[in-house]
Image (tube, rainbow, N blue to C red; front, side, top):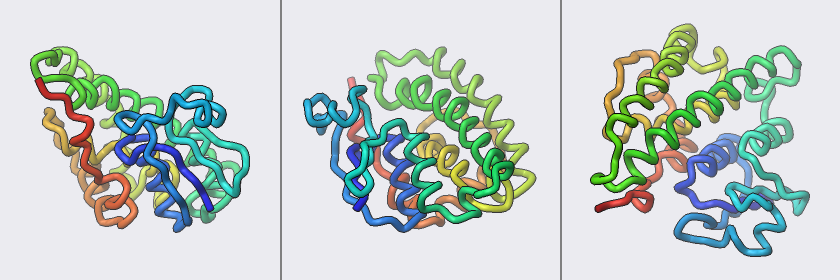
Length: 214
């Protein structure tokens, strides 16, 4: 059985769990991190010296950390050829969009926008910084809009690992109270993701426990 350490409100854990759900894998997950604690214990640090989540162990093998590496492991071991192509060039195309999503979309949204809107007390929010961060993120979402106007999924005609890396932040992007440009292709794509049962179960999760009030 696959074991995962990480709270369900972590966006990185959500990406991992969405992948687990799409692949139909049996798992056991332990709430660790944030208000649950447990990521500073000697037991946890022996698995991941960084003290971050998620951590995954498959068949009691070596603990894996870093979400992108875990996702590629799962895709390579359990994914179909359409989800994670075996041929190197089609796989590189999927991996290109997966890395682009992680480095440009996720990192530009989670800390600069989501944390400032949800995980910061209203009286301490820097609205100018939030607007600037949205403008920065917009340039990458514009790239996604063009790409998604060409096909149903980020890397083409098939649902792939790239959609996990890109799509897992969209629930929060569309849910929080921020200014958003009209992007019909992106909206169509997101609406299609919300029909996937694994997305609804593992990504469309309340983040109220993360909110900070005055």
